[in-house]
Image (tube, rainbow, N blue to C red; front, top):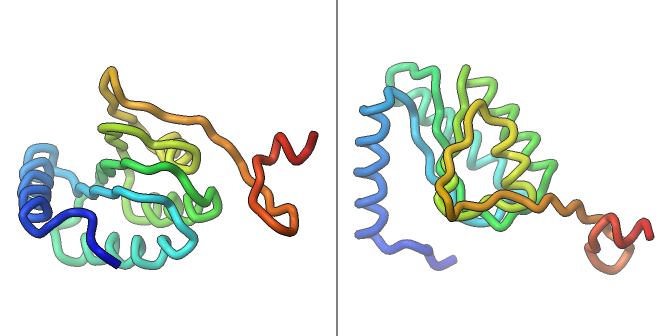
Length: 139
């Protein structure tokens, strides 16, 4: 799989996240992409790595940009974050749709600007062939 950000952008992002961690005395994560069924294990490993490497921080900020994905996976991500942190805050620089909105709503605070977006939450069900919007399927 080809990385979305090249190494220069990755270094800049890590530097900025490190500066934010120092300023807010909190751990910071940046996530860009869909919330897939396979996300919970690497997410858990990353959170455990953050907790092991650094002095114990009680607050986590998650900078999130996602088109959405699995609500079940979000439930597991929330359990992971709440197991390790007393306060979980979200920063939405662009958009957090569907499952991303659910994830943000699990937080203590959501920080957005005038052009950021949340929602809509559009549950999907499998009809035997395809994933379809639940409301349309019920009709």
